[in-house]
Image (cartoon, rainbow, N blue to C red; front, side, top):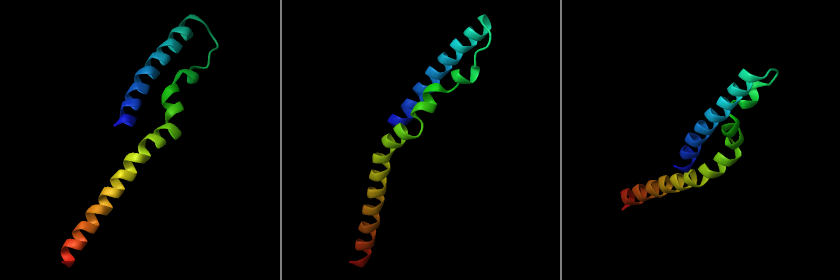
Length: 77
């Protein structure tokens, strides 16, 4: 699923961004380390992932509804 792939990518990018934050923090002082944590995942979580996941949910709901009516109509015959 595309959303799962994006989450995997975000975790990898976020690990790199956090490593840069660690590097900067080790060589300077006064940075806010929280700004280097889960940057990409926080950015895409919610709106982007929601939009990506909605079509597959609608498709699954439609398939379940069609299966229900197919069973119901077969039983009525």
